[in-house]
Amino acid sequence: MLIKEKIEADMHSGILKSGDRLPSEIALAAEFKVSRETVRSAIRLLEEKGKVYVKHGVGTFVVNPLPKTPNSLEKLMSVTSMIKYAGLEDGEKRERMKVDKPTDEWINFLQLEEGEEVIIHERIRTANEEPVVFSQNILAESLVKKKMINQGSIGSLFDYLKNECNIDIARATTEIVVPLHTDRNCHKLLIHPETTVLLLKQLHFDFQNRPVLYSLDYFRNDVFTFTVNRTR
Image (cartoon, helix red, strand yellow):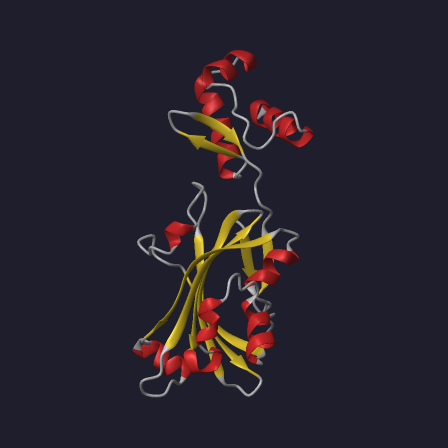
C-alpha cells in the first residue's frame, strides 16, 4: 500500500522520528488522493506492526518498535541476559520487596519448613526504557536473609544469588501459561494495542537439585518469542 510504504520509508530515512505526530486522516487522504478509509487501513497496518501509536482524539504518533527476541526454552537464561542478548538496554522499576507468609503452593514447591517465611520480590523489567517483563520471585527467607530487602537495584537475580548468597541456579522446570486478561499483572505490560502476554511459571534448582526460587515471569509476546527444539 503506497501510504504505508511511504510512511515506513520516511521512518527508515529519519524524516519521521519517534514521537512525531502524523498528519491528520484528511491531510493524508488529500496528499495521496485516496479515501479516508484507505488512510485508516494503512494506519491500522502500521499500528499492528507496532510502528505507530493511535491516541484517539489526539492523533497518530510514530514509535520505535522493539525487536522481537527469540529464546530457546532449552537454555536457561535470566531475564537480564535475554534483554542484553537482544542488544537492548536493560533496566528495572522496583515494585515491591517484602517478607511474607508462604502459600501452600510455595511451601510445596520450595520444600519449606513449618513457619518458614519467604521474600517476595516483584519488579517490572524494561528494555530501552519500555516495560517488557513483569516478574514475581519467591525465595525462602532462610536462604537469602532479610538483607536482600535493603538492596537497591538487584540487576540479574541469578548473579545476585551467586555473588551474595553463594547459590548457583543450575536448571528449572517451566510451565507455559496464557494468562487471562483479568490477571492484574498483565495490565502492567499492555501498553500497545497489539501487546499480548505469555506467562512462564518456573521452579529453579541449584546444582544439588535443591529448589531455591519460584518465579512468575510475564513476558510481552510482541517482544519475546520462545522456541523448543523437538526430535522424533
